[in-house]
Image 1 (tube, helix red, strand yellow):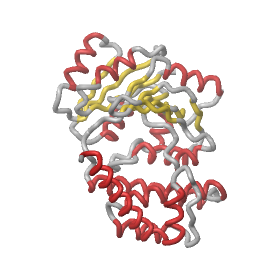
Image 2: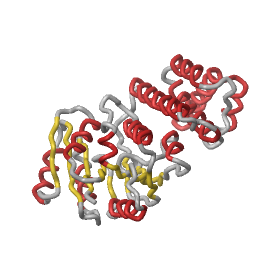
Image 3: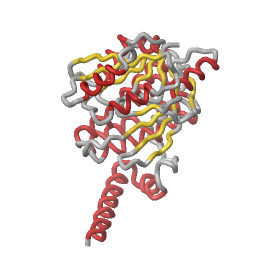
Length: 321
């Protein structure tokens, strides 16, 4: 099986060499590397070209105007000749056995999955690493909980992705889970990879603006609403999956409240049943759950936010005085 590694690049001069080198060091040899530069203004392209000179038969470079990561991935997808696609963000890293291991899982399964779900290592700004496992109860549990791998940790069936129209270039966030949602509607056949062979690096890009945070949360909530509509229409929105959905949806609504109180309240009133209760103690502490039970969504959130702000101010006062 041929694997096409598609790397969208935008102003990643600090990371792109390490990223491409991690692909060149893969133990799987039947690969091509497709770097798609999305209108970089730094030294990204020159660094790719230097690697091209050393590995001319393995690295292809496509240069496009700046249209975003999803557009760059679609450009690489159209160029790719492999049966499977390794999408790789340019600041992420593959450990040497990643692709070989996942291809072996496919061969051993005697099936052709829509994608392989890969567990991964999250590396924070300070170098601290956390291992993130997928939710294996079913693909729907993983999709709802945003625990179905990541763009770079998964291995994707090119035919399936092309069949659903590729990445949605209009979305500004939640692109990978939108893609997985459309794939699962088409063919919910996945394989789980329990090894940690991908390093997802969280880049420190400054504080997120209130506008972007609000927009991203709203996009994520609307995606969950689409998932709800689909599962309900198929008779799958029952029991534990239903409970799982509402508990996790509440985290998104609650996060939005601090940035757009009125919109969060409207969404809560529209999307939650009247008898909704918080039950997941892994997501909510006992004090907040008690507040919610007494005062409902809006007023418990106001009380909690005021308490949290006061506590943080008190902590900062004693820290700096």
